[in-house]
Image (cartoon, rainbow, N blue to C red; front, side):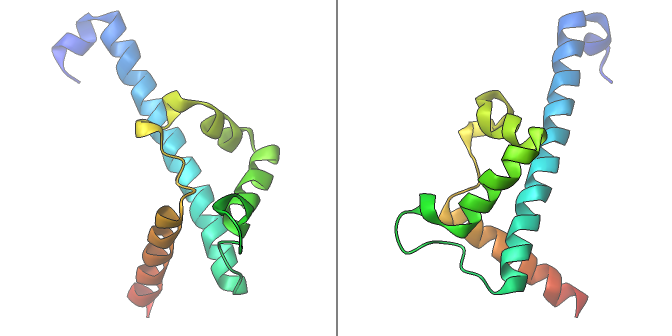
Length: 108
């Protein structure tokens, strides 16, 4: 830890909050990857035929959030989401699929 962080309570508190937020974000991304893995394993479509709001991925994430305060707090709090991302967009879903596909290839 840097000396200036040890000397300043505000800086130390901000650093500790940043570390908690980072861990919170990691936990949320793991949940989102689990949703993507489940949809992929079941061979279900990620997006609906209408808007992205009707897609299976988004709807399952919202369902899980109703029962998981960690995810619900993350979706509700812009402070916890750097750059205000939600990872619910089709681009994020494609990235999740790419990451999961790479993991499967690495295991094979």
